[in-house]
Amino acid sequence: MPLPVPPLLPASLRRRAELVRQQRPAGVRTPPARLLWRELAVLFGARHKALVHHVARQPGPVMLLPGFGAHPARMRPMAEALERAGHSVFDWGLGFNLGPTPENFAFLLARITRLAHEQAAPLTLVGWSLGGLFARELAKQRPAAVAMVITMGSPFSGDRRANNAWRAYQLVTGHPVDDPPIKGDFAVKPPVPTVALWSPRDGIVAPRSACGWPGERDAAIALRCSHLGFAASPEAIATVLVVLDSLAPDQANGSPG
Image (cartoon, rainbow, N blue to C red):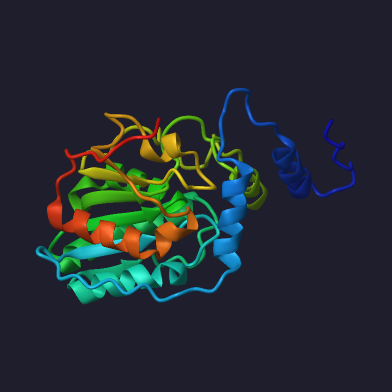
C-alpha cells in the first residue's frame, strides 16, 4: 500500500505527490523492465555522431519537436543530417520540453504559421515522443501550415499510461497524463499525411501506443532502435529522410502484434 502524503507539504507538492502515487489501470501494458534498463544505458552511454548521407529529392522546411524532458540539442544529429540533405530545419523554440501549457501551445501555433509564411511552404513536423503529440495537435489546429507529421515513439494511441514515463510526467507537469491543459483526442488523425515510427525495442512507450491503428495514422514504420534512439540513431534519421522524400503515407510497414 502506498505511503500517505504528509499533510504539511505545500498544496502544489501534495498534488504532485498524489499524482505520482496513482496506480496504473488494470490491463494496461508497458514495456518490460529489461528494455527500460537498456534505455538508461543509452542515456548515460557514450554518444556517437550519426553520419547519414542523403540528398533530398524534395527539400522543404522541417521543424523538430523534442520529447518530454529533452532539449532540442538531443535532436541535433537529426537536424544536421536533414540540413545536409537540403532541408531547412527549425527547432521548436521552447528549450526543454516540460509538458503542454496553453502558453507554449499558442507560441507553437504562431511559430509554425509564421515559418510557413516565411518559407512559402508548409512545414513537416517531426516529433519525438511527447513532441509528436504536440505535432499532431498543431497540425489539427493549423493544417494549412503543416505538410506532414512524423511521430517517433509518440504515445498517441490507447491508454495514456501505457508507458514507463507517466508518473515522471505527472510529477513534473502537476496534471494527470490523461487530463492535460490542452484538450483533444490524441488518437484522432490530423488532416495531413501522418506517419508513425515505432519500435518493438522501445523501453519507454508501449509499441502499440506508438504505432496506433489504421485510421489513427496513414502509415506505421517499424524500427529497431530504443526510445531514446529515435532522436539521433542513424536508422531513425535515415527513415525520416526517406519518408520526407517519398511522401507516401499509404504504405505501412508492419505493425506490432
